Image (tube, rainbow, N blue to C red; front, side, top):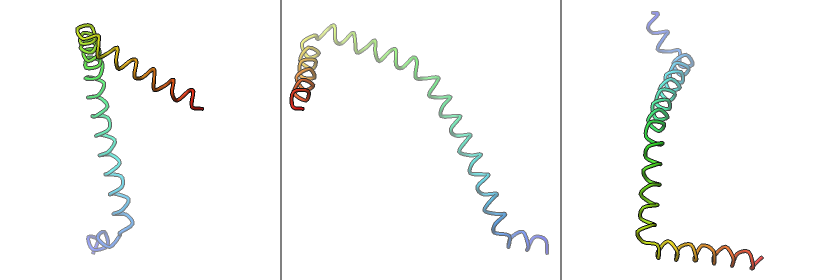
Length: 80
């Protein structure tokens, strides 16, 4: 009889399911944040290092990109 009343108590089952989901999401969030904190500093530094090294090796494309960006911003500024 008790097992039947537990199956019929939909409200309690929904609350339990919500609590289980919250716990699962919180655990996954903490795990992902931990991984991001572990990899971000090193990956960011190495990516910046590689980008600056490529810019030193090929200054013409970087200069062209800079001129394009400056022209774009100037065009937007003068249009207003």
